Image (cartoon, one colour):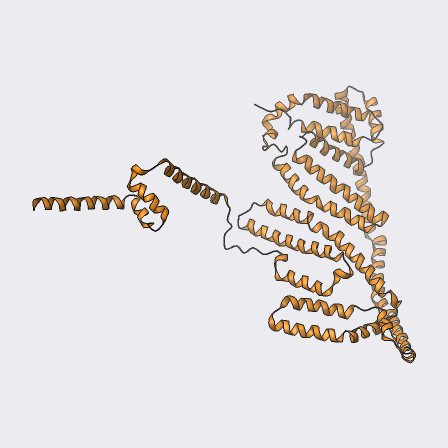
Length: 500
């Protein structure tokens, strides 16, 4: 009896210890996953640790590595908040389907093939507008940085929008040529145009009735895309007529005699309307424009204007004299030349000075001289290349529009100009953040000015010497003068010296 009691006591104590270990060990979690074969596989090695093999350890380690990789990938993914409602692009909305089916019914591409390029450019531009709005939404919700909309907008201008002027201009020219050829058979006779329009309606009356019936059925069945196609079809049936419709009507001579007097009456009414109505709109506008011009030329404000011009001219002359005198003193002390020699050199230079034009040349040389100091692959150099391309295409565009009247070539230059806008936005922006494209702005720190001067001493001496040589020439070298000055200034702030 005592032995049985001890046996029962040992069993109860073992059960209690097992329950305690179960509640505080991984065994409990494995038992909860008992239905999972992998859990059973892991459980047997937990209960019998002596059975753990090298293969099982490798399997468990692979599971841990995959879990860790997945968690790291999840942390790298930036999931936007679920409450943000981003708009869909126009090409992804039902409205694009309506437009596409409307044009399909209109068959505009059959008559004018270039219409497809214009429509595609407009549709993709509308997509870019929606994406730009979504970009602003993301910045507002602090998902993207503030410069993201700037880059997105520049990409919109230099992307699909740059294709719109040229492609749609080409479409307009082709459509005008098609329409002109189509209606040239009427010879400007309004009566014949009206008759052809009426005969066309009578000839297509059954087709028009069928299209209207299809629209009513589509409304009942909610086939909205087909409704848009039927509307395009109706417009084409109404407007697709030509002078051939008059020939097909086979009018008799008696009918012709009764029609032509009506045509003459219609033309007479339109001529009388143009003679009486149009001048009533044009004449007051012309009189107002002439009166404003006369007042601007002979009004009381003209004397005040000329007085201001005279005072400004006197001030400019005095200011130039003071600046010239001070400049002579500084250059004379530096070069060792006397005032007479220096005056002769300056007269040779100033003789070719052309006001704002020469000042712009100096400014352009100053900027280019500063940029040339930087590495070849710096953002500032890329920025300058984009700006130069914009300037070149702008000049070409103006020349084509004004001189040669070649609108197609001018719009082509406009497209090329717009395509450089993204490069200007990106390269010019990052030229401020990192001018040298080195990943750091430390080279422009004021601490390094001393090292920069020592490293660039030879370059700076050459800039001074070349600047003096400009004063000793009779040719127009204002751009070179600005370039040497810009190079000299930039040498204080940048050098190719790498501090170890």
